[in-house]
Length: 394
Image 1 (cartoon, one colour):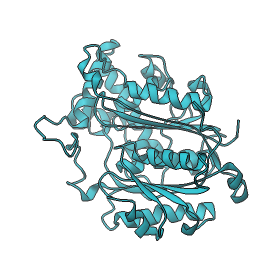
Image 2 (image 1 turned 90 degrees about the vertical axis):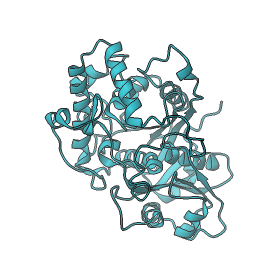
Image 3 (image 1 turned 180 degrees about the vertical axis):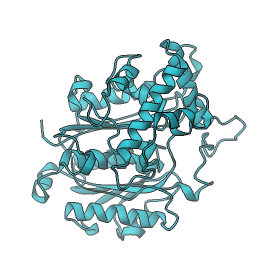
Image 4 (image 1 turned 60 degrees about the horizontal axis):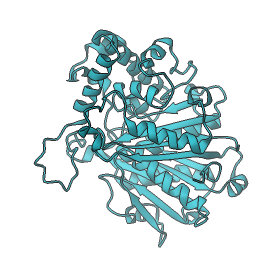
């Protein structure tokens, strides 16, 4: 299989503030994100030859983006892949450029979750067109099952396990206080996490991400064109997308200690990017911490920690801003917020800024390779997207 590595460059990005944006429409968020990206790239909307719009509940067709930023008669494709939508829009845009079909394209993710069912409520989990005769299992419930099984499988006491999860939450909130566009910018303590109301045992309030409104956008082109626009463009190194078929839950051996989609998707991206040792070669990772237990499992699924040893790396500070492999430098879903289809592009925005050296108070020292990761759906029906980005060719 031919690799995407170094065939596409990101030359502009934009991201709105995430939060309860009652005074903003989806079109407002598209405009805010896109025009920051246009200014960053030194381009205009008329320069876009094609676009991909990701939205789960805040868009019906690509025409909504055309209306917002006046892209007249430009091909726009709406993408929906649950929490992976934003990264999938970027992925489609990348292949549009790499194929030679287009020179300059736009990827946008937007969501107004607070306007839908009181914030989309984490209750609609079955397909919208299903008969609804099956009992829905909200995400907090099944991630709680992953937590209890993970602790049991690796012989970790519930008290010890919850303390590890609390450290992850505290880390992400701390990082988020340095992200001006984050939704929940406040420091928290491990004691607050451990004493917070239980949502689905053993996960408490501070183990769960918030749902937000927000939008993000990226402008992509060829490396040759990128060189004429700016010096600090960022290259796409690898892209993975994997969707589970549901058979896992029919298997008595399904472990609830790992998401196979995470493993397979990251393998695809690593292979394209030429990554052999992710723990050593990746300088930062922005991952889908919808719940703290998922970030813990991701350390292992993505190859950052040995199986069952993620907690030891948490205790060692490996994934803090000062650690060997900082994770969720902008606060992650936990603090930055989670407008489903916008989150993937927000993650790329953080990696983009970090690689450019423009991340402000949370800036890492000379990172060269960054990873983004999304996961959505239900156990063994999960969809997963991974992107790897770098500032140098090769």
